[in-house]
Image (cartoon, rainbow, N blue to C red):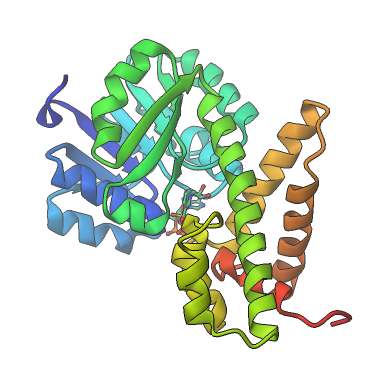
Length: 296
Ligand code: NAP
């Protein structure tokens, strides 16, 4: 396996997730160049020993592996192919690993366009939230050619604890879409259960202790039910980003002639909450909707 010191890594996107992930790459001993659109977010990483890059192109300069972790499909496209984008300086033989959650079709398109310049591509979206990012304990779902996966594996291992190569480019995003469909259902189900418990006057501490040991035990119940009870929804994972992911899943399903009724319901509630100004809250703000009295 390649030693961390032997690989130069460019990292673009120091948001909630990317900030921790890039820091973990520095801690693991990689030589890291960081870039963020809002440049002052790079200061923390510079203090840890990373080099600051003035653009995505500069972050890609001399990098063996370039990681992107931005919001949505058009943002990844801009970072890769826009002015001062990664594409301008990425060397032939280098690998772009997009860890954002975007559409599987876009991932395949980006792979083709980068491939035309001799740059390899992998999609490697993650699950595990900001806690997982901070603790280098992310679940990473990878779509890549086998030889590309071999190159990026040590980089991914510095950010995650469960790295799975699911197949060719696009497979990681498909797996993430499945993950988001299931997670969305969990959030809405826990929100509804909590609404029922609160309205019926149950002791919610005792309730969580009881049901948390039974069949409905889940990450959402364990980590977000108490916030739902408290009616406060600190990030976490922004509801507007989860809505983006549900739309990716619904669009992918439509292309396969498949209905996803639960996802359609979660997306419609998230759309409404976003319109009401709650899109920047955690996904657990679905509890705002579930706790409304009928007719509200
Ligand atoms: P975030 O906190 O909103 O950060 C977004 C990052 O992308 C920021 O660094 C932002 O730069 C940058 N960015 C956005 N649009 C850009 C553009 N057009 N050009 C250049 N940079 C741009 O998001 P996050 O929570 O870290 O999520 C990042 C990705 O991971 C998303 O695809 C999300 O769905 C996925 N994800 C998130 C979680 C989670 O729990 N948060 C979990 C799993 C997966 P600025 O600082 O300048 O705004």
